[in-house]
Length: 270
Image (cartoon, rainbow, N blue to C red; front, side):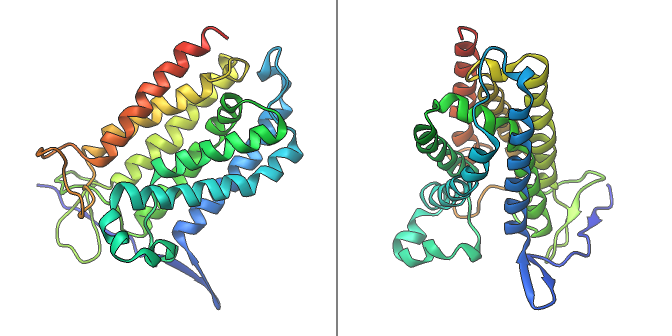
């Protein structure tokens, strides 16, 4: 029997900067998007990564795409949460959909939002969707890590009850849980970033449209399915299909695994 770790003494939900209150969740999104913008500029500046292709965008086009990315992530994440995780609640109170400050975002919805944003911005600058997604796939994993750390600070989306040395006692509880937010931050943020970077810098993934996106989709899908075994399912949904282990996160991640494999196989022909 191990003694669980008390939740760290961090202000939940928000940080107060004098008269300004900044939500940890929002801070994670902004920090992640700023990093992605900076890193994309680094990638397009390194022509050796692109083989015989021209870089997908210029630095100025990346700056102009920031707002498209932001709207895709936030709008798609919110719509995804409404549709996938809590539709009855929002059908009963439609105006609550616009209460972003109450929380409720879905990665899979945000992912689809980014796909839509990349498609339309790519058409605007004359660039194909696969190449737009490759650049984003190489840059956004740290953003996922930042947001998962924010989830941990907010004591939300925590793991199942656990008896391990690193179990954490979250506020209002008397037993330890898996810090699944940290598991996700490590897998989706750190390891996934390293995996895609190896692809771009060692195997010229950016010179083969769809390859970086394939690594990202496959890596995220497998990581999320794995972590779902340690994560408490959303209370309004619980486990699916009459089981005690299948969750909505697993169901939504399985198509990503399949798409990732397809993109990797397809990229071998380019």
